Amino acid sequence: MMDFLLMVLFMLMVSPIILDPFLVKVSHWIAAQATVERVSPEALDGDVKAFIDQAGAEFAALGFQFAGYMVLHGYTPRLTSYFGLFRHDALATTGTAAVILHDAGCVLRYHEFSTVFPDGRIIDVSNAPLAGACENPEKISYCYPQVRSIGKLYEIHRWVAGPVATKFRGKSVFAGSDTQMVARALDREAALQAKYGYYVLNENRTRYEPTWKGAFMMTRRRIFPFKPIFSYLETRLARKAIADMPA
Image (tube, rainbow, N blue to C red; front, side):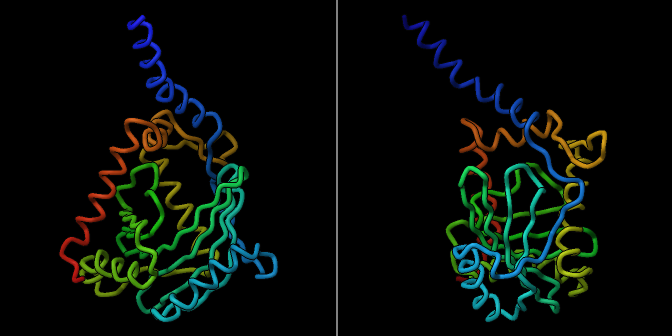
């Protein structure tokens, strides 16, 4: 009886490791070209607009200018992203207040700061729960879900981006119109994910589909025992980045 229970327990532990990558492989994709569009405030759900507008005052106090309400749709299956884009041209930094809606009703809200440098390096700081599923050597993401203040999040971003900004003496890359800039950044990151073997273009070259490597990478961040391990490592990395930051 004990052997049977142990076998059942083992199967329950192993089955997600086997099944989840397969499900990701057959159901997940990202568009080869991102479609980012402006959206009128009247077209937004009240809660979405309220979240963006509430963040707007804090971004403005930091010297950011509101660039508009935007939507990213058809980029990944069953997800629609609404966000307010904020620009700080002098620092070549963007800020976003984003609301991601899943067809099943799940909602994710977060704030993010992002700077792109001339060598292609990207530094992101957000209060989203987790960083991206696949590693990207050219992008460093720090997540501080416990930081709800946009002002504090911006202080953290300036701190972690400071050494790179000093190296380039403020000559960061900040090109394109608002929607084009966001779409180009997404397309570049998708191409990099393909370069590092996480995705491959489909035959019609309209979508990136996950490789087995990519499917396992995405899966291991959300199933036991990998999820708590990655959560711990990401939290430790984020804390280490601001260990010497003034209070």
